[in-house]
Length: 336
Ligand code: SF4
Image (cartoon, rainbow, N blue to C red; front, side, top):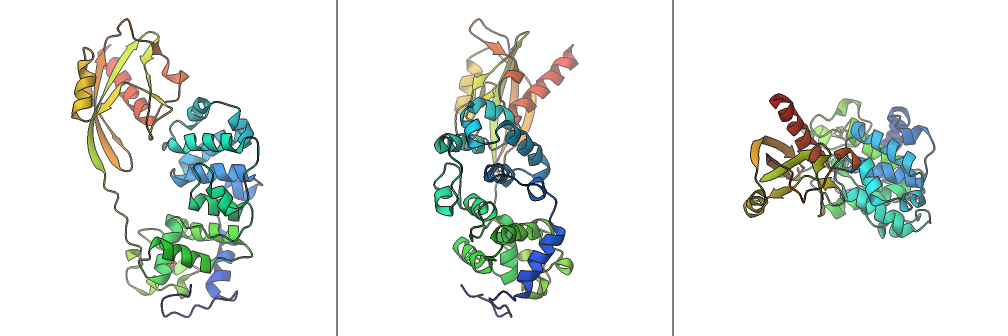
């Protein structure tokens, strides 16, 4: 697809921003572990999956821990999903871990496939991840479009582009000699230079070919996607004795596979849960997900003869439950 704006961009290898971008990347790329040592496609995949929805400084220790525990898909497939979730706890978005486990099982001892189309058929691998692995690990000429690339291309063109148009532009810009480095360079520029609120156009290697930089407010592009948080009231009950805490196996897309305290959201389910035993309110805890904010009323209750308590350290638990338990323990300490 030809550039859609009137700017002197030519589509041969002498494009100033093309060489400029890779030169900039060669000199300025952050020394991330997978850039300074040889990693396998599987280890690259682990990094891509962890870092898509987790900040770099938080995600790096998880990457180190999970690749050490599961150096190949076969080693993961030979273990339990619960053990993977235990390593993943605190990293959030647990569907990623469950999909990773499904992927390892699907591979059934084989290595990751090399082509974009075959990768895309694997559980938990979407267009971005398939393009990242195909280009970075296998050198295939496929362009990645993540939030950083979307921002950079929208500003280069000073247009609010649709997703298909962004992919098409990214494909046109891709350097076929170094597709993996090119993709990483585009993402790195978005992370370090062309940031959402304060793009550093003065130091950007793309500046001479960027339409947005000629305007007084380059941060106007792209249109922000709205992420309105729903406000939800929830209740949780802490039942404890000297053996530990009453925990239930969670179900559902968000926290399925983890263990948690008896919990309910919404008026009807919350009333039913609270009516199921004698409870006492000890306070409230707030917890934010990307799309919802939970105001959680924390109750305590006595152990009954049917309750089986266990150590919270013995099972994988979500951050939300661990936050409630910290609140509960602080409350208990105050009382004693
Ligand atoms: S010149 Fe400015 S707006 Fe354009 S890509 Fe670089 S940092 Fe972003």
